Length: 278
Image 1 (cartoon, rainbow, N blue to C red):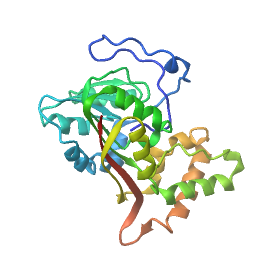
Image 2: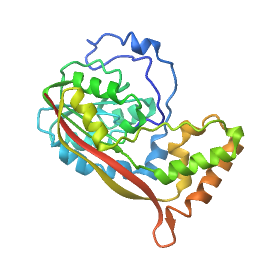
Image 3: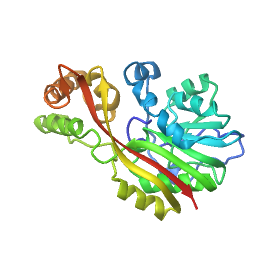
Image 4: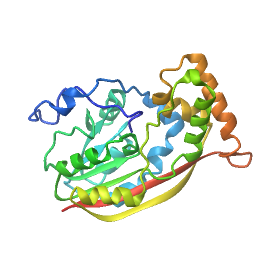
């Protein structure tokens, strides 16, 4: 559930404190911030967790299992998973989200999916609406495989090929009209099912299920979506420029993803996957 492709640099501690500090690749990463307001996020995007309950069912948590929630956000789904009797450890790039997760009683740490310190420790890795923020898909999958026990499950859902096409196109169009905004940089990775299946198999997974699922999703207003999810694209804009950006995106999108009958409907496509570590 990270907001931009942001890489983790400093880790305070993990689990029981027996894991060594992250080194090498992580030490070379550029230190950046990843700030979220959990209350504001849930006010407009509670659907992110609500629509993921079928993915929790696909995970099929078992009593006594140890499950890593990668991109745990505020812990809403981690709480659902623990209802099955499993023990969840949450990891997220946002310190604000981790604090909200801990407040729900979930063990959670600030950290990156491409820098996990665990080795053969978890029965399952679960992830919802996060992996499309990670361009280093191969690195993420390798870390997930390393984290799992043999026979462990990886169950995830996130943006797949075709996700938010109208929205991304609108943002590109607005940037092209305003050279002063700089170059548009797409922070998301939306793979096809074939591409992601190949990556999983190359990292030693047996893919049990993978599919692209169209998910038209209601939103109260597209400007709230832009406030929350376009921050990595627009963080360099001043306040006036950001308002112009949102207004012009809205003017474009009102012709594609809005109707008087249904309101705003996000053009989401989700990639859902279940795989087992060989």
